[in-house]
Length: 231
Image 1 (cartoon, rainbow, N blue to C red):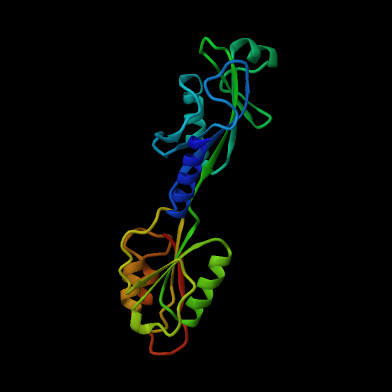
Image 2 (cartoon, rainbow, N blue to C red):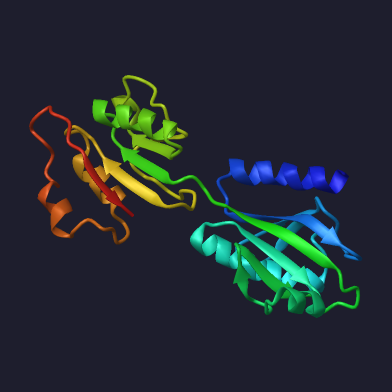
């Protein structure tokens, strides 16, 4: 019970930190197995098991492969590790997928069966908004309701209201942001246009090279200017 509580505590901390990991849970066992139903383990993207226990080498290889695949496409998986004779009775081969289950052979002398649910836990998609125009503030509030991790960056002197955001940055120096699918919006309304655009495009983005250059001059009008692209 203590081990289970420790795993779930770490799951909560990793989620709060917007970190990527896989949670593997043993949902069924038959005969003799090292881990029993309810056992859990946390797997990092590099394949390291940082907490918990789901058995030894009998299941580890199949679970780690499923974890890599789950992180690649964001979809959970069920893995069934069974001895060779039971796989033959089912008419499946090791590595075969059937009915949403990936089968693997248990090479251990125990010859038990374990079914493991492999669930990827990914950071929320990230929205970075540079500027605090009315459009920016409205977008931040809507994005949080849709499940985005929202970062608002603008000089503190430009703030007239507190943005509804997960992170607030004074100025346009974004620094290190959490790893996630990221979208960037520049909505500066003529205040700090050039600085915001430079901060938003340090890496290659889907916006054309010509597009940022065409809007680099500060706006002389007070209407809200908003530019949006993925990074």
